[in-house]
Image 1 (cartoon, rainbow, N blue to C red):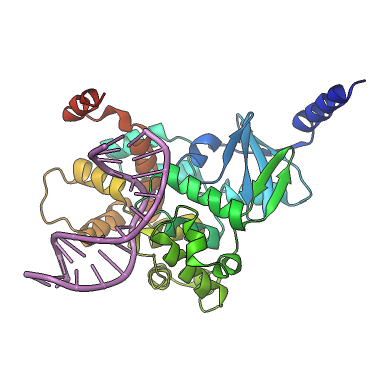
Image 2: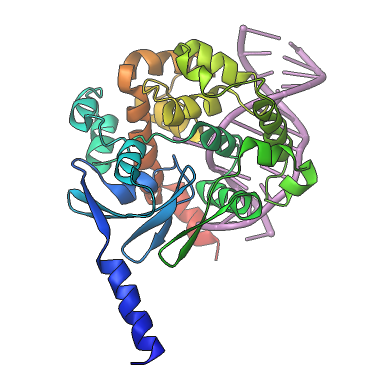
Length: 311
DNA sequence: CTCCAGGGATGAT
DNA sequence: ATCATCCATGGA
């Protein structure tokens, strides 16, 4: 038989066999990976490849089952289930959302979206790089950081790069980091990496602190303000009440919850969201965010004129 | 081409 | 205490 034939057989064996199945009810993999909380997963034939920490993973969804590539790691099913937070009781969480038109529309639209558990440094570093960047840009920055400074992993015939450790980034220069399209964010990432690498701030230990204390400690880091801190709390510290307010969410809040209101500064908005959205506010926020960002095409009135006017 | 993006730090009122 | 400005970059 020809070499090509052998190769095809080998490939078919890899892609059809050796997939571990884990139950995943109330879960939508593609929606979750496209919801702007994680930025490095890449779509490949039928599924996605990416890294969970240091481990390369292939994962695809078949109804209420996740099929994952069983690599060397015995604990991979447990790692995947933990990463995608399959233990969150999503039905209860969604039922706890406020009952209002915007929230109901988002809840219906985002069915199966879960707030995942990300590695702390990776999440912190990525969101430091996220300021004034569109999701597509953040994906590109994440990819460049991984390509230049991360480590190579292999899953099937795909190459996956891990996110570089704080030590790894700490020993680069600001100029090197700027080559990853970071702009002014390079210095913030570099200084934060050096603070974390030095042990001056222990990201794991912050997990034992209260919400306000975690937020305060994170905000001491350069490039970390209220919004980034809340993203890290929500996506890496499992503080499900953390409610990040970015330009999208602020627009939604003003349009849907405070139509023609004056005197709405960031502090008042933040106070409202904590009280109104409650213990699972972070989930509610993520649903509102993804719904708005995904259905942005329908901007009304003047925008159509603008769109038609430009070529 | 212009617009704007999962903001934060700084200096001016 | 609140508000305005600047900061770099590239996809849409």
